[in-house]
Picture 1 (cartoon, rainbow, N blue to C red):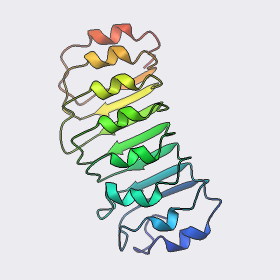
Picture 2: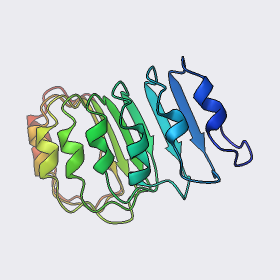
Picture 3: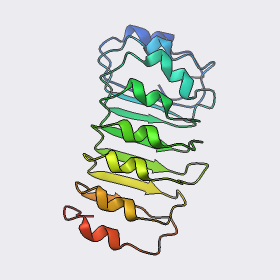
Picture 4: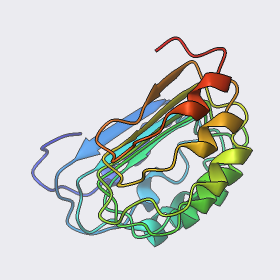
Length: 178
């Protein structure tokens, strides 16, 4: 749906078998409701659309089968309560201060979090992500890696671009391969 000239999402509503929807650029408004009955949708990526924010995802609250979610430009992660089965989330270029809603995603296996406008101040919410096997927290301004020792299922990690001076907590991650 990239670069369709800013058309609305209305034509997409007829595609009831759609399993993946990716778009970027501008939309004439923030109305996501044309996607609200695409119950087979597993992947939703709405990138770099300046007029779509957290509250706009409320229109998609019935899409409980999403397992891959990638929005940008968000001011909060409040909409995550609608998508309890997410396995992969990619959160680049957001304006979020409170990342704790991510910690409620009990099935989460893959998390990308990078280039947020505000630094990652608290990491306590990560302790509940026991199924996490891949973690990328890139350029988020944190230095404490102590939280990593709780993520014992991690196989891959990317914490580059952060002012980290100590990595002793990585020694408890016996499944780590990269």
